[in-house]
Image 1: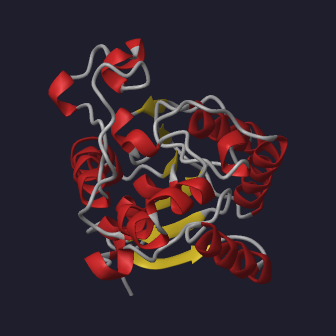
Image 2: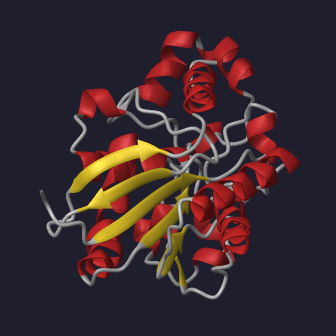
Amino acid sequence: MEKIIGDLVLIRHGQSEWNSKNLFTGWHDIDLTEKGIEEARNAGKLLKDRKLKFNLAFTSVLSRAIHTLFYILKEMELDHIPIKNEWMLNERHYGSLQGLNKLETTEKYGENQVNIWRRSFDIAPPKMSKDDPRHPLNNVKYNQIDRSLLPGSESLKETLSRVKECWNTSILPELNLGKNIIITAHGNSLRALAKIIENISDKEISEFNIPTGVPRYYKLDKNISPISVEYLGNKKLISEATKEVAQQSKK
């Protein structure tokens, strides 16, 4: 039996204000709903009940992921541990679709086209104009980032590329030191991480969905390969939540 050298937990942020309105959110910095806060707190309680301990936390630079981590660590009485904010863990950038209602977008462009933008591996939505005030080039939060790296739109493949760089340069070295790590991020950036960790195929990853606020727990061996992977919590509720996320992704 492989020796377990570390624990890794991935958690998608709790429900956000734009999730509840069925809008394309992307890099728009929106906060949690009351339901999202409760999801985060419940995740913290689950992790505490499992007696998991973390040495380090990673999150994106978007409020909904940052605040999810805050509520989790507070519940676990671990709000003293170091936190690393990585822009490369941001949600996929949805380009000019950002802020649009998903149903109205489907009515405008057609279900087939919207499904291609949303679910294909290597096709990005229409780009956001560089002079659009919503473009990350015009956000002071990203002033220290190489401007050539800031996207106006991304495919899942492009999101995976930047998440993989974050994994290789920031997360993996810490895991190799034997640290137990928790990561709160977003549907697509966590999808990319799961693809890397679990070696999920390009085809399968397009249909892979992580429900909000449910911890995905990995026991890792000395090669940082998963010995086991599971969602923590009530299995029936998790199954229902996963189906709901899959249905939401098709709306």
